[in-house]
Image (cartoon, rainbow, N blue to C red; front, side):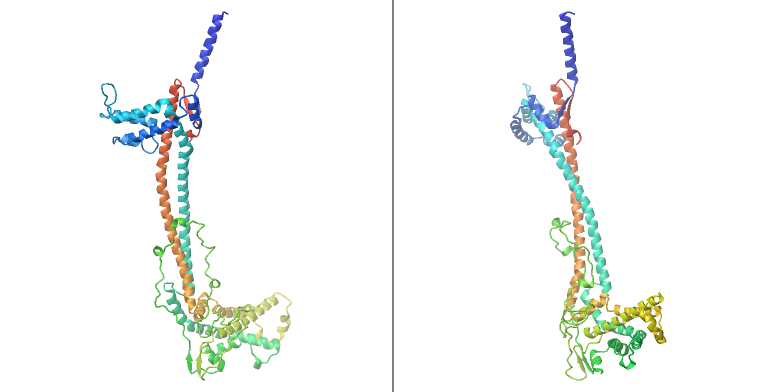
Length: 537
């Protein structure tokens, strides 16, 4: 084969190779696009300084623009670039005044001159390529992620507001239910707390009378107790000394302390009255709109302490005693001091009542009824608890005996009189009757009434405790309203940001296509692909 043929074949092979290379696409990562342009001398290294000058001229040119809707839409939302400027010139050419040329073929309009100069400065040394490449990288790396993050934050705020709104609504409802339940336990409506409590205190004598009547029905239980003790201890009926206070009230009713102490009814009773000032009391109501709860924006879930659970029990209320003629006393027992037994009764410092100044006159503690007097009321309750303990023990022994247990009483009770040979159901009924009388002193209502009777200042403390429930419920309503406002603000911000994100993505995609076209023109229309996260926005 001749050398000519070899050269021809080599030339043809290189041509085919060059042709195949020209058909290969150009793939450029968007983060490397600016460096790629500078390395291939499509753009100078100093393009940022040139871009600053161009930006100033663009700002000057924008001050004299026609009210063209297409131009206004073009300039909306994103940073103006080289391709925007070219579009502006095309739109200005359609305008009769701006599109006119002089005899030298130059535009006579100053607007066209300004924008034409901007285009020339952009195209010189490829400044527009460097600026557009930087815009692409900034939009993909910063603008779009920032807007997406802001949208996610707004969506999260909306979700939290919905959850908190539900929580605050349920907490407010729960607090109001507890308020109503507590008032119901105390026997008041809850509109004017002090007035209603003062009215209840006036009903105490009637309630004490009911208790004494219930106690009078315990005669069979007391007789059973006495006969059992007589049988076991060989005690005579004349020496019976058990349950003295209970027996006295069963026989005489709820008399004055004076009559119990002296055995005679008083001629004059000078009873100390409990005074509760209700003259300036207003009706308890909702005050949500009148309370300044501070800055709602600073109220976060962690900043608000709702407590584990609001439980309005008797033990949770600190009672401030004092306020009667007898000095400071425990509202339940009426006994001073601090050392108490398992029943909460302090026997270390019993107050001895002085004799009245005149015979037949009952005043101070003597003027109080036995169930109203803390000291004698304690004796009455002690007798009831002693009787209950006896009956419970007998019930246990009877049940054990019926089950075949080896109890001492099973042999002893064989010789007992028939009145002591009671069956379990009868004793169970006796226990229930005794417990009913004891329970009358254990209700929430009675506890508060006795506390008020011994300390009128307790009413103010009780009122504040109840009002605190309503105040906290009102605060929950206030916070629930703030969550509604915060939700609307987040929703409004979300609706404002969403179009911005869509516009930025749209303009970024447009710049991507424009840059691919510009680079393709410089490489004989080879396919150019700008790669990376720009394609997954």
